[in-house]
Length: 438
Image 1 (cartoon, rainbow, N blue to C red):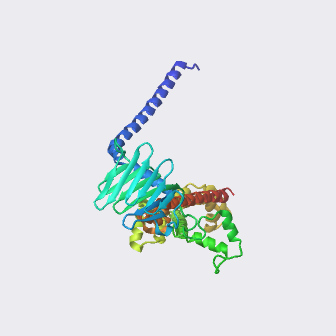
Image 2 (image 1 turned 90 degrees about the vertical axis):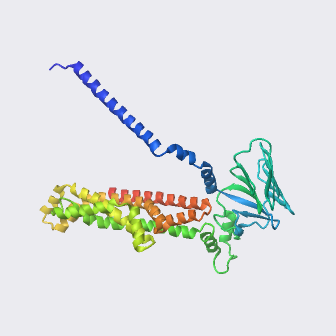
Image 3 (image 1 turned 30 degrees about the horizontal axis):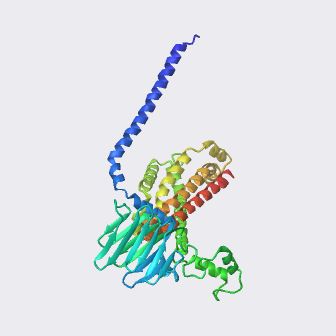
């Protein structure tokens, strides 16, 4: 049979041309959607109103801490403290702060120097000049270098705010002159500022922990060191870890309930196991209702019904995942190999034995795999549900942000949440491999 090469080539070119037009059409559709979204979501206005400087400040505050040098214009007293907290006030100023009577010199490094004399201040800024300001009963009077005022310098009748770099800031008001210097790292993370363990090295702590001379007569030194860290009031390690445990328990309880309730319901929804079409219809619609309502909505409903607490979060997870897992399990049951079930039946096995040896082994990998996947996913969801009031680390995170505490505390909670999610991912992967692959 003769082969018409020309016809084959024409057909190949026609098909290639069709695919090219299809690809170009898809690209054009995506580009059109992006253009529509650009105007529908008013992206230009969003970018125009964005406060990028605030994002930078919050990012800096999450990984750094600042020391305040404050001169009270009314009492003429100086105070140097970490983050301006009274519980973290230096008994003697650090070496970059020199105080002599009513005068003080604050070295902010790289040529940035603040000189304070009573209610007057001179701030030397390399590349700009000297900013002078004086506070009195009428407000704040500023004397600035000639030229255009930079964006980082704000002058008002009652206040002067200069922040030439992220790590340096000076504020002058009628009440006080305040200098901020930033340092990288979280302050007092291990021990409180006034603790006898503050600023001790790891070697010194080990020597103390193994020493027979007790710091606290009521307990060994290692226990005293641990409890001082555990009960650190600035970081509340004990409350954070308890909240994390609540979140994990919420995810585990909700997933277990969903898995073990969804499996028997799946038998009622599977065509090859449930002869009643009416029953199958109602069970499948039940699955639709349970998974059709988002987990957050279930959480709000249960909070309204039962109040705040981790149990409401576990119920929300259980309700949503019962619908999802039940549907997945029922589809797995409908796709099993009936020959294996018939083989067990041929041995004279009872109904329960046919399920035990003919059905369960076939759906067990799906049951374990999906349950472990949802356990990992629910660890993240439990954090979000907790933020609505169900408790756990989500609620603690929102409270920390709402009370305007330092953003390094927020960063600490977020880092721990990510670590827990990674651990749950690794654990579920390991369990899945051990239980399914053997």
